[in-house]
Image 1 (cartoon, rainbow, N blue to C red):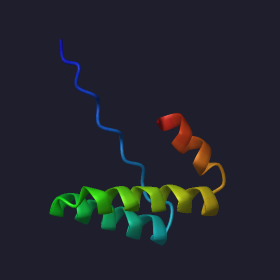
Image 2 (cartoon, one colour; image 1 turned 180 degrees about the vertical axis):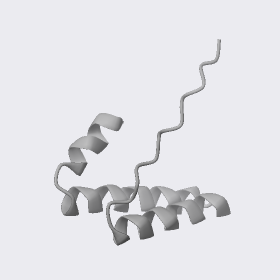
Image 3 (cartoon, rainbow, N blue to C red; image 1 turned 90 degrees about the vertical axis):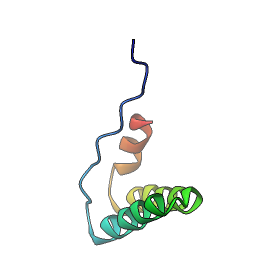
Image 4 (spheres, rainbow, N blue to C red; image 1 turned 30 degrees about the vertical axis):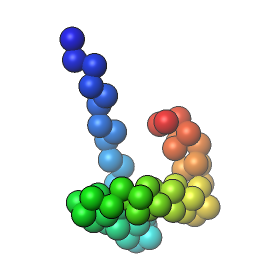
Length: 63
């Protein structure tokens, strides 16, 4: 039995700032800088909560 977790389906960026933060996250992951990648995820989550109505509720459901 395969117990490996499914990778989350990426959501398309809602705005230029979302795309910028996601690109920074991806670059950090490719460079192996997981701390910076985590920082980008946090900033993206905060940005979505502040700038996009209801996005913070969606993030909580996905976790």
